[in-house]
Image 1: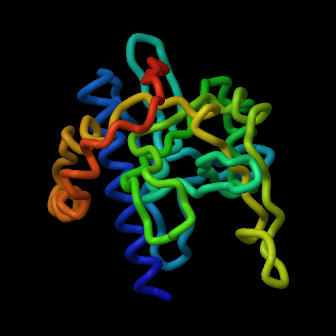
Image 2 (image 1 turned 180 degrees about the vertical axis):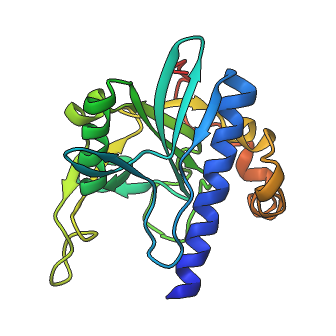
Image 3 (image 1 turned 45 degrees about the vertical axis):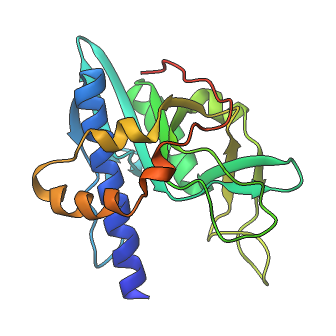
Length: 219
């Protein structure tokens, strides 16, 4: 269990670093990271306020008076939702509600980003390839436009401790192809990890165009 947690921690840390570098190099944002995690507790960044503590997005980015929160998620595959017949990805509902509160308190726009790195898995019935690349949208749009929600895990049903909220690839906008994000190499402390990570994504996969998805300028 601990090794699995450390693996996911490293993968998430690398993905956050890649997204941070992409924002700096490709979109000229300055980045104030908040994504250090306490390995013992597993707790991520917090925003401390007079009304209590809230889970914070991973980074605050800014340029020329344009200030935004960014929550950066790194995942391998989208999930195929058979009921809606959509590729979906999502986050913990409790975290989502905290991000909504952080935006309300700060009054800065808040974007949730998903870096998806693989187009094929091992499930026979999934209609691969699935999309890859960097996807995002602003949280006010996402709160009103979601694919579905799942209940908290109980008796073999549901997902996660507090449930999940999922979005499809129509609600999340492709803002950069995978090859572009991986091409902006993360430096310094995560450089060695990012080398191993990017090498694990084959050249065949990063050349795949994510179906007929149109790239959108949200950043």
